[in-house]
Amino acid sequence: MKIKLTEQELATQQLHPETLEIAVEQVKANGYILFDKVLSDEKIATIRRSFDPLFDEYVSRKGYNTGTNRAQMFLPFTQPFIDEDVICNPIAAAVLDRILGDDNRCTYFASDTAMPGSAYQNVHSDVMPLFPDLSVPLPIFSLVVNIPLVNVTEDNGPLEVWPGGTHHNPDRSNHDTLDGSINPYLHIVRAAQHMHSEKVIMTAGSIVIRDIRMWHRGTPNHSGDRRTNLAMIFSKSWYGGGSYIQIPGDTYEQLSEKGKKAFRMEKIGSPARMPWE
Image 1 (cartoon, helix red, strand yellow):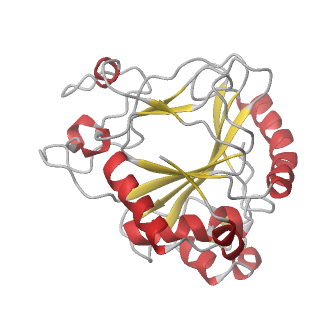
Image 2 (image 1 turned 45 degrees about the horizontal axis):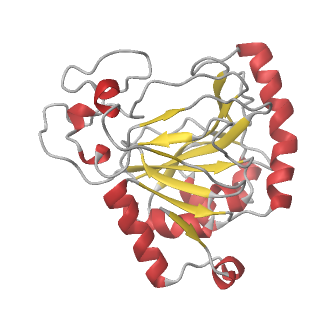
């Protein structure tokens, strides 16, 4: 479901109470919600000017790592990537806090880029099961936040998702099949062919929030330019080890209280790490 924010919501950066309720309901029931065009064109352009050469250098050093002409790249904890509108956007935070609790934290700070010529990924879930032998679904414990740096169209490799229940399957059906392995309990790739899916078409600066267990895949980029999503994972306070994101001490001190809380369990006091390090 796509929500277009009102002028008042954009100006105040606060969701109307009913809009917040709808967003939370959609994440819980369908697995995701899309807020259309939250960040300004100017801010997105600034981020992309820094991102593109960084990504080009990363690929030249490390190559592609998530499929043909497709790469996941961790982001350095530096401006403009750590703009408050990115790392603790009030619109996204309202939904995250309602679902995960206001003590949630960010455990992943990266990007996903499909270059021209990228191919389909296998349908997969981003996490292994918490309790493989459990036969009932668990509440949401982790949410992915994506912010596209370009308009995402039918042609340039949009994310494809399987809403309405894939995240409700018992944990044992959520094995990651990105590497081509077959889930012993449920053949996700085969099952997905006979289920409803949606391509997430959106404008640059939109915000997508999805249950980390939701089935999804990257699709081919038939355009002449890259399709990049910034990607963060926010989790309940007890989930994830922490200390993956290196944050210089002075940078951490300059964050808002919300930002400090989100990254409180990361590697504070370490120099920002470049993606290829």
